[in-house]
Image 1 (cartoon, rainbow, N blue to C red):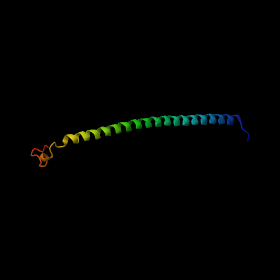
Image 2: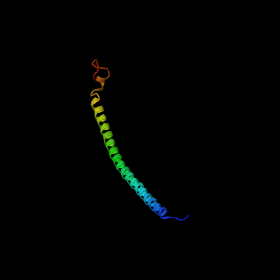
Image 3: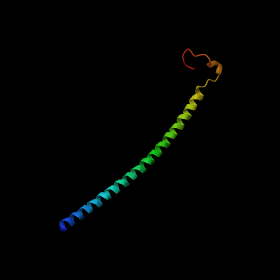
Image 4: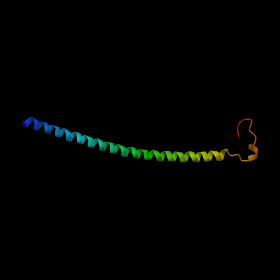
Length: 85
């Protein structure tokens, strides 16, 4: 059997389709790389915010502990009737 014009045209169509499919795959990969880069930047920003908030919490706890310390240790030995130190 010989190769007819239909077979030749079909090969051309399949070749074009393959090229289009490969282009779509490469574009999808590029899109995913862009998305990954964006998410990594967002993650870095959020990590900075969490670190800053952690430092703020530590500082506030230290301040609160300093305020809650009794000025005269002898006065703080018995529990208060009102529950307030």
